[in-house]
Length: 203
Image (cartoon, rainbow, N blue to C red; front, top):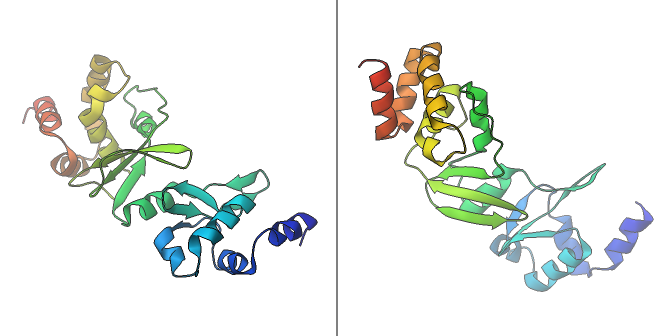
């Protein structure tokens, strides 16, 4: 144990130390869960936050940073979002992922989308903003077919050349697996997207 960590430990009470010892690096905790582990949770959290071993993520949400050779590391997006939603049904991704579909999109977006069943709106969690959007259906993980369909769904909101993207999308359509694309359109496509792609397929 280094001298720095020894000094750090002396800055918190024994009760706060016991609380810290039961927490895991990389995990996000809600205050109510921590209250079950402490007789004076707010005081102990203040001590641990001041000490730097616990970070406040948002109101009532805290995390224990993992430490790398470059310093403290924030929790994974899935850990943050799952704790915020109190749910495991969500899909987290950046619109920059659309660039992998091959439709000529090149923009890099400094935002994170969260498709889910519970919350809608932009929320700041830690130093990041998450754009939560309530969707009736979304896949468990990203697929090329889903990204193709979702890009077309959201094209009006993206900083891209709309007409150029649509031309490439029509050309790219035959390169997808027909069955998987049909299922993605049926499950996730907007009315406008399904109508447009049906027209391209002459359905």
